[in-house]
Amino acid sequence: SPGKKSPGKKSPGKKSPGKKSPGKKSPGKKSEGAKVSGSATEPKTAPATRTGSVDRIGTYNSAVRWILELTDVERQRVVKYDEHGDFKLDRMRALLAALGDPQDQFRAIHVAGSNGKGSTIAMISAMLRKCGYGVGEFTSPHLVDIRERICINGQRITKNEFTESMKALAKAATEIGERPTFFEAITAISFMHFAAQAVDVAIVEVGLGGRLDSTNVIMPVLSVITEIQLDHTRILGDTLEKIAAEKAGIIKPGVPVITRQQQEDVDRVLRDKAESVGTTIRVVNKEIEFSNRFCSTVELGPHNRVCLYTETSRLEHLPVPLPGEHQAFNCGLALAAVDHLKSIGFECPESVVTEGLEETVIPGRMQLVWDRPRILVDGAHNPDALTALMRCVGAHVPYDSMVCVFGCGQDKDVDSLLDRVSLGADKVIFTKAVRNTRAVEPEELRRRFMERSGKMCQTAETLKEALELAARAVSREDLICVTGSFYLVGETIKYLEVLRKSREDTASPVG
Image (cartoon, rainbow, N blue to C red; front, top):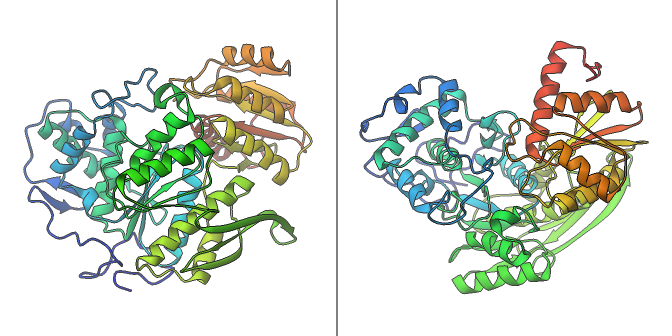
């Protein structure tokens, strides 16, 4: 099909000149103020720069320092969540206009929700890549390297591409006279990269909420909404209806919506929004026929299998590549998204889709990162995700005793998280990630945990200390589970990578 690469190719999404992916908007003429230079979209003219701003971005490290100095809503203790505070879509639109509106130069799938966004995106991407398409992924947060957020066909944006894009962005910010937030900047860089590399489709993850999120300037071909639960309640609202209304903010006129089964109040909010803007909404296991079952085989061990039937696809008994029943529902959502693309002209043979699904990999979710002692990391950061994790670990990772290394942010439902931890862990060590400036202090977690459960627990001021305590407390058949925050998970992965380089792979994290 036009613009489609040969299946199995892993090129970064560049198509042959003159070709166009199915149904893809023609980029047409780029706005007069932009030209493509390398991987970045550069402004037509170089506006006056301020000392200490654009002119100090010369290397990758200086580019990273520049962006990290911007207001970071992900890490702020106090967030002004309105159109006049840290969430100004007009500023984002002005910034992108100065860059030549790269967000209008590729097709996109927009993904919002509380749980399962990353897993759903990973499965969609794996299937489309196997079908031969150039697929961009914009996700957050990153675990170790900021470039993890921007990938094409699984390959991170290069350091040089990031640096050149950062230069262009800094110039554009000077031109509009307004400094972007960290998330606005990283979002804009992803759009520039996807446009410059001419991806067939980009899968764009909402950072926070949806209605006022920096990503909500795109006009996607499909909106996908994963499970909605109580999360970021201090910012988005303290009820499911309020949170659902924010997530529903990505629903746009004429853009179909696919979601999974939600709680009744959430379902009503999403359907009302879709009706009000005049678009269709389809729910996996309602409008879209879907089923799943748990099974076990010698080859795959315990796992889930799913079936999905539509007018264009008949997908039967596909093994879910990620463990846990919750991943079966994410898989159904991913299959439905790919089926929609198939219905608008993408070539996605069912046999190739199945092969692609099997190749799904996502770090930081049920990931075993060390063998002796066994250390598992998972970014579960709200009560429902933590419940799913504890169930999943019990079903898929045999162990005698579990020591949980836990830390979380102040904007979470802390007491409910602690209740879930107490149900699965035999011992808990509370700590905090260095990068998470909104982390609850370990001593505060210990006090609240003791009041609610009375189980054994300790505190550690650093992750290194927490892992050392955990390693001394477990035997060969036990498990250390690090969870509660993607910041904590990322710090764990980075620490163990450094440790592995300095010791034998079988070395214990005990200092």
